[in-house]
Length: 180
Length: 241
Image 1 (cartoon, chains in turn cyan, brown):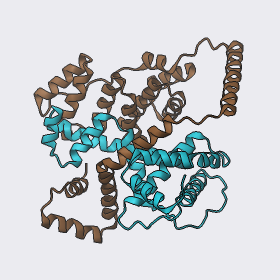
Image 2 (spheres, helix red, strand yellow; image 1 turned 30 degrees about the horizontal axis):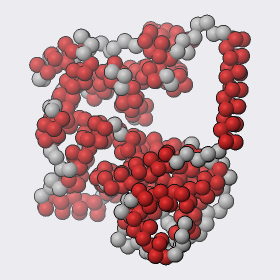
Image 3 (cartoon, chains in turn red, purple; image 1 turned 120 degrees about the vertical axis):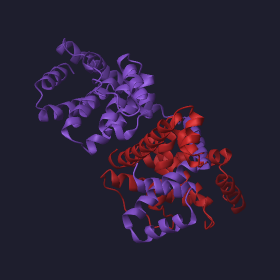
Image 4 (cartoon, chains in turn blue, green; image 1 turned 90 degrees about the vertical axis):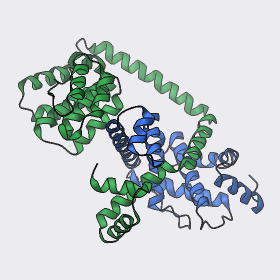
């Protein structure tokens, strides 16, 4: 991947906008290195895919924040981020790890929880996604009931169960991170 | 749902008056537990709302899955391991030849019975009648719908969840049934319902083909139940599993 600053800037702009082309470019540039690192550190290809998705998401979230600082060396930034995240995962699995590199790449606990909820939402059934989106859009229980062609009590109960499912899936994801 | 949860939801969707909003914000400043609850609800709310990030994750996952990384060495090793496993399993089967074992799904079919309907005509008589009738006629879609229509104050929530589970299991919505019941393992209720809920959790695991979790729930249940019938059923399942 080219390393000049204009190219990196434009790539990161595209990534912040969620463009698939930017994801592809970063994948081709950094995934082989990430995969080799994970395999050399007690992981497999599925771990590498999860780690890549996680780190790319944190990069994307960072870029979308209004106070995001410029990233001068994307390759170094991404490498430090995935190495540190992987060591964190290994630590949580009670494995001995090398010391974590000092860096300015800090992932907040809140960002991690947010990412877990996004993953959990992705895993929900389509019915639940629909109900929860109605709720987020500010629709009343009566309106949700009308849209689902059901009773108001059922709509309320459905919304409650879907939210509980979301929390349960999120807690499973967190637990798997700890015990995998 | 608790009153606090309802309040926070109303705040997040913008259904509170400015006075109510201020009061909630003031409470957040003073009450640590409430603030934690608020932050959690806010996180959930924002993540559901963040359609942009959801699309981003889906695109990333699609790219990861469509670009397969070639690794012939690993693939050959996997094939060799699979072949070795088949030979070992075949050997074990030929030596032991377990004549009496059954698949978990078969055991589910043998042992699963819907919990008796104990609701009588209470509250919304017409709704309850429809529920009872649908239950007796094994019309599980209607049962699920009518349970949603029931006034939650008319029926203890473990019992409601129990009937809910039965209707889910009968419709092969096993994942949902398990999620519904697993919470009772973490937060047990009184003995009247707890053992029944655990029995149906074991049934759900069997339906899913998850023998090890089914065994673990049944073993624990056998230790604590005083019902001889239940102990016999559990013994029979464990023997054949």
